[in-house]
Each structure stands twice: as C-alpha cells, then as structure tokens.
Image (cartoon, rainbow over the protein chains, first blue to last red):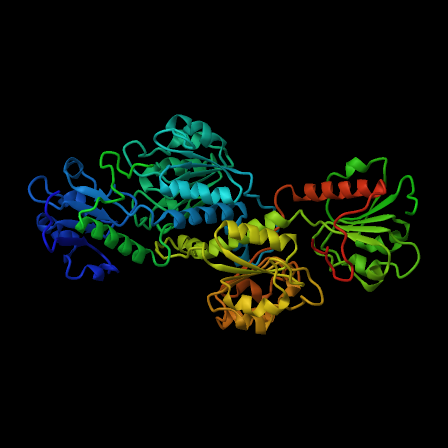
Length: 319
Length: 319
C-alpha cells in the first residue's frame, strides 16, 4: 500500500458540530470546511469526512484529475448525494455509515405500522374535538409486509415486523436465499398490507414506486418510504392517495428536503409527513462520530476498511 | 349436577346486535332484554349473557333470593360492572371473555410505546403547521417497562414488548416465578420508562395509581392505562402531568365512560385519550359470540366451564 503521511489531512465537510473527533488529536490535521471552500481544499486532503450528509457539494467540487482524497466517508447510509462519474472512476475508497440506522429505522417503521393499524392519528384528531368515537382497529399479527431493499436496514425492518407476527417478504436487487428478486416485486406488492421502501437510491430504484406500482397495490394497503425520496414518484403517490388506490402512506424522505412549505404533500389525505428522522435516535451523532474514528484507526493502521461502498452500484454489497 | 331443562332460557342483556347466537337455535329459548326489564326477567332465566358489558344493570337487578340464572357470562374481561354481594354469595357461576382481548391490547400498548418513543403525535402536529422540524427520537429496545396485572392481558403485553427488546417486569397480586408481588411495585415503577396498568378493578387495585405512585415515577416516564378507569386517581394523574412529575400518559379507560365532553382530561398536556378501544379489533364481536357459544355447548353438555371468575377476587385466577 501507499505510505501514509505521519499526520494525514482530514477534511471535514460539516454544518453542525460533530462529536468524538477529539480522539484523533495529534494523529490527523483536522480541517473543517463549508461547501464554499470545498473545491479549493479537496486536493490537499488525504481523507474527506462528509459530516453534512445533506450537502451535494462533494459531487460538484470533486476534482476531475490531480490530487484528491484517497478515502471519503459519509455519515449516512445513502451515497447518492456525493457520487459522480469522476469519483466512481477514481481509486478513492468510499465508505458509509452502514449499521448505525438499522434498528432505529426498523423501530420507526414498526411505530408507523402499529399506529396506522390502531388508527392512532384519528384518535388524536378526535381528542382535539373532545369526541368519544369508538372504532374497531386492526390486528398487526397476521398481516403481510413487502419490504423493498435487502440491505441491513431492510433486514432489520423484516426482523422487527416478524417479531410482531407480521408475515414478511424481502425484495432485493439479486434473488438469493430469503430474498426475492425484482421479478417478484409486483406480485408481492399486490398482496401486501404494508409496502415498505428501504432501498438505496440508484438508477434502478429511481421512481420505482410509480403509478404502475401504486396501481397494483391493494386499496387497503399502506405505503412507507424510509429510503430516499426519489424512490417515489411523488405525483403518482399523490394521485394514488387522492383517488384512493391505496389507503394511506407515510413519507420520511422526499425528493426535495426540507419539504417546501407550499408542497401539496403536507396536506394529502391519508399521508403522514415526517422530517427525515426515522434513523436519528438520541445519541446518533455520537454513534456516527465513533464509527468514523474506528474506521480512521483501521485506515491509519493500514488495515482494510469496512462499509466499503460499491461505487458503481451505490451501496455496500450484501453478504 | 342439577338436571338442565331441555330448552334452557338464555337471557341476553344487549344494546347492539350480536353475532353467532344463531348456532343455538332450537337448543335454547333466547330472550333479549334491555336494562329496564332485566329485574323482571332474571328469575325465569337459566343463563344470563351480559352482551352489553358497559351496563351496570345486573348489579342493580340481581335477585336477593329465589330463582336466578345458574350461570352468568360477560362479554368482557372485567366483571366489576356486574358483581354485587348477592351474586358473589350465590352458587351462580360467572365466566368472562378471558383470551379475546390479550393480543389486540398488547399490540395497542406497543403502538403507544413506539409512537411516543418516535414522537409521532408531535410529528402530526408539525405536519398540520407544514413545519419541517427534525428531532432526535428514542430507541425502544433497551428501555424498561413495568406491567401491572399478571393475567393474560398483562402477560401478552410483556410478550410483545419483549419482542421489541424492552426489558419488562410483571407485577401481580401474588409473587410467583416471573411475577413480582405488590411489595416490589414502587421499586419497579420508579425505574420504569413505561408503566402499563392492565390489572382488573378490585378493592386492592382501586386508585392504585395515585399521587404517591406518580410521585415515585421518573420525570421521563410514560404511563398507560388499558385496564379499568378506576385503577387511576384521575385528579392525581392530572396533577402529575401538569406539574411534569411524569412525561406523558395514555388512557384508554376512564372512571366515567364515555368521557364527558367537559372533562379536563381531553386537554391535559402530554395525555393521549382514546375511547376504550384497545382490545376491539375487527371481528372482536364475532370472537366474543363464538366464545360464548363454545361455553354454552360445554355447559349444556354438563361439562365444566372454563374462564370461571373467582367472584371474591373479581377475576379468573391465574395458572
């Protein structure tokens, strides 16, 4: 391997303070930057930590040729915000925050599924009107979920829903034991009570939930997106909800984030809008910082990195 | 055993249509009654089915002496609405709907716990204001619950919360393997993130959640009542919420049901009010009807009944 400088330059693209980097004091020259000076600083950096994972600045600032970081880490599960042809073609290693968000997101999806089955949003509405309106609610055990995305997040969602007695089917890019391929998607979606999108955003998954797919769902089905906004054709979802093709949906991610105040999605019938928070539990920034420091220590010791993203596919390939 | 009449008289106290009784056509003389004519009809009945489980009419109409039903079944888990000293002292057998509500109520409690951990009620508020407000939410796995009531409902709640990774403690009237006695209650309640009331209403459990008990809970604790309203001193709960002794609560049952429109409980900070619906999932009336028919068939065949309530204690004693 190439010799490392004694004190590598760690460039941090940040918008908020980040914890745990103190452990690297004396072992790395840490330089913080905003998006505005990223392009100018990238050639001097050995490592880039994309702490502000909402920023698209890396994609725009990545040098076409010449010196550049050998390693880029993003404090997020998705990498679509930083990937560009030049980065994909380079020998720079990209790692992500695989493993941090799995269980929190699985709990979040379980919360939505149970809240919808028990009609909790309507109960809260009736409470505001001081109206005692008894309704029958639904059992969750015995219902069917189709989880799309067979990475650690999708698998954690399956584990949590199974623990609640839900029958689950998991769909990934490549069929293998316990995982269906895309050819089964329409059949599984058409039988599901819950359709959960937890896939990475790639060319193949862009707008995979479109008018056709909402059309094959049951009128009683509920759709959840905790992956990336652009997995969903939002106009098609709006139509599916307005015309009652499906019973409801919950979006935690959107094509444009923050969701603009004038977006019609805020007020769609049967749609729950949340601000991209499904994976962010108390202490998550600390976990992300700790994970990066561990990766940095592996890298500085010349050991192989984990969570290495397949830059062509746009995610860490599964086991 | 006493000889049964060929066609016993089954008196049904009902407010709503009830399913499944058709199976008894020709085998029982089924007489429906409202509360107003109950007292007059009770002496002619062999069996009383309390289908309207919200009614207190049995307690008032039960004959002090003379002919009376040999068997009373209530389509509810609780029996406090029908029990009176004369019924308790008589040789009439009382059975309840044990087993129908366990899993639905366990799911309902899990829905509340997850929704609160994920701050879902606030997310819905922000959505109405079209406000994108990212927050950190809480993990459910690793939190602690204290479930009070060691019958099938309490045990089902424990099972479901455990499946979500919650550490649980179960409290019953008598300590035994896996179940704490009342002596441990304060200690367990003081350490719990979630305190769940699922006990029957008896002299011992009346107002067991009072100012003292809310006072020992953690300021971050959340209280849930899916048992009976009078387990809770509602004034003490109001005070505990207003003074922030605890973080929040959800009541599905109340001292007075339906909760009057002018009750201050509707608007208490941090309180979720629902209309006694936690156990009532689609098909529940059908399940209740089926359960009664099965019990009736045992009774008519001279076999021993199940779900027999200990009339002194007010519930079916545990295994």
